[in-house]
Length: 347
Image (cartoon, rainbow, N blue to C red; front, side, top):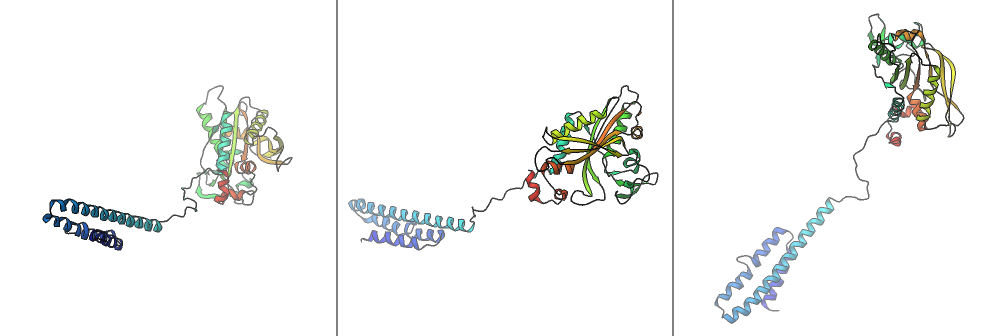
């Protein structure tokens, strides 16, 4: 091995022994710097003959290139080692599921309400909204409920610490019927003196409150009531409208409806509405889904209308119960426990 091969071997050994890029640069300066060993060899050619300069200079340049190649290789090795250490420290377990931003969805009762509004909207019904804290007159008196009606008692109705001018307590509305009253009175005032007056077609969906709680009842629940008033509206129209609604809501033309005679103080005659499915787990079973009837003359007067000229029907149904039947849910409380495992099924 000549002196130049020994120099290359020394450089390769020094470069390999450098553990960091900074120490590698120090090793580089010992061989390739201004005062490095290769530079000193080139300076020594000053006293050589032209022939020696040509031969010896070529050998020194080849040595320099070999040292530079060894330096580059060591630089790359140190960079690779640093990257490997960084990747190890910041390693990701790609077998784990990715962390995604959660997306919300509509509550099943909200889905049912949107569906109800869309179906009745296609039949020309408006959607009414109103306060959830109501007066005793709006909740009971306007609807032909007598003073001693049990729904006024603390066992059925939530009252709030507010009184109207007559000294009666305000209450959390036990049904959405007050919205019908408010809408009809505003309609009658708007079209007062106009003959014939435009018909009233409205549904009133929303939250309602009663002192009741079990697998099929909740202290807060959702109800939708409807009203159609005009000068030539009959019970037949009620049957046609509600039958069409149920068949669209449940997407079944084989659905059967039964209007069973009943009593409500705000309608006369009155009927409970039962449905029976032609297939599925509830096949052949009659299930009550709502109440209905021709609006009582006293209630028509409280609307601000003449019962001798204006006639119509009203109906009411529990949106929670309709959602239970549509989605096959057997416990109402599941809707309000906020268990995401249950709610995700609907989105």
